[in-house]
Amino acid sequence: MSETAAPRSAPLRARAEIDLAALRANVRTLRAHAPGAAVMAVVKSDAYGHGAVQCARAAVEAGAGWLGTATPEEALALRAAGLTGRIMCWLWTPGGPWREAIEADLDVGVSGMWALREVTAAAAASGRTARVQLKADTGLGRNGCQPGEDWAELVAEALRAEADGLVRVTGIWSHFACADEPGHPSIAAQLDRFRQVLAHAERAGVRPEVRHIANSPATLTLPESHFDLVRTGIATYGISPSPELGSPADFGLRPVMTLSASIALVKHVPGGHGVSYGHHYVTPGETTLGLVPVGYADGIPRHASGTGPVLVDGKWRTVAGRVAMDQFVVDLGGDEPATGTEAVLFGPGDRGEPTAEDWAQAAGTIAYEIVTRIGTRVPRVYVNEGRAG
Ligand SMILES: *Cc1c(COP(=O)(O)O)cnc(C)c1O
Image 1 (cartoon, rainbow, N blue to C red):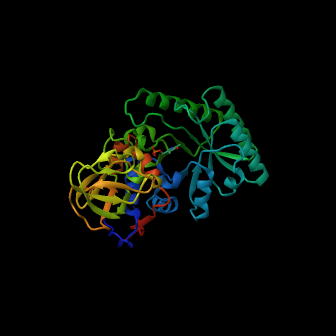
Image 2: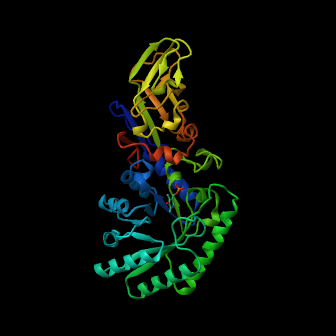
Image 3: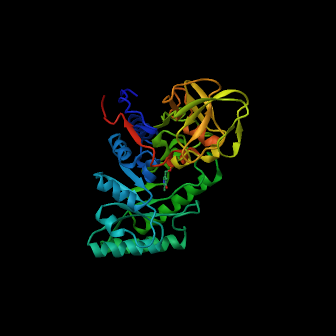
């Protein structure tokens, strides 16, 4: 990071600092991992909790040619915020909003005949051509059209709509089940099936602008999956898709979010003192306790009760007892940091603080869930917003 950090804003109960220089550097790193492909920065779910509009702008500045969201509402919000480039969304339910999406020039993922029929009708009603990307289920077993007869029908119907000027098939795409487990037999099987559905569509006359299947782990570990476009979510935010694959630093990535809170109270207590609901922690002797004013309503996993790590005054402390809705306690072991001292729950790790991955392990989940669940009550504070500096 060559950029200098912006001055810290006034003390807050808690804040999620979002380092946009780190995000831009991650996008550049991902472009280097997939030099033959365009990068789609996936900014669904408020950019995995980091703030969709700010992250989308930073990603585009760093060379992401596409933005991706799950829902059409998320994509429309990016358009409304002034993002003018290619935006794709893929999680549709009957009723749309197809027409709004067509009029906002979104690329829409279509996984089945019902969706193709609805988008075609909306295109006819609006007098415009819908940009449609046909999705095949090559083995994830989730959304996407089943290869074989269903795929052949979907492709044929899309070509008819294309001939009528109602749709343009801009993409053919799919999604991996196990890309975070290199060597998993499903990976090669999905790539094979993807090539088959592509070959079928192209033989039938589809001329897709982009063919894509790679998510973050495939982008980082599987060059043969890159095709024309890679869809990177978690790696954009500097988090490794899986600790088994490697650390962020192993891939040249840097975590973007730092979550911290101001210690709200420090007090001396005797030994044998129960701490927090249920008294699942009892002080082993005379000690000091620190109150960290964030809880499960802020997205701190209750499953990290008794295990979550926090950096206070240069030392790792552990959540003592249960995480409550708005607060939890750490045993400071006799130390007496001033109230207002910063407690860092997670960050990039280079100030000695834990990472989102450490919290994932403490809570028995994945780092994706840690960052995406940080609640709206925690303000996002953007640093290094400018390109230069
Ligand atoms: C969320 C999502 C991605 C991004 O996945 P990461 O593992 O975060 O890179 C890519 N494609 C689709 C269809 C998704 O839903």
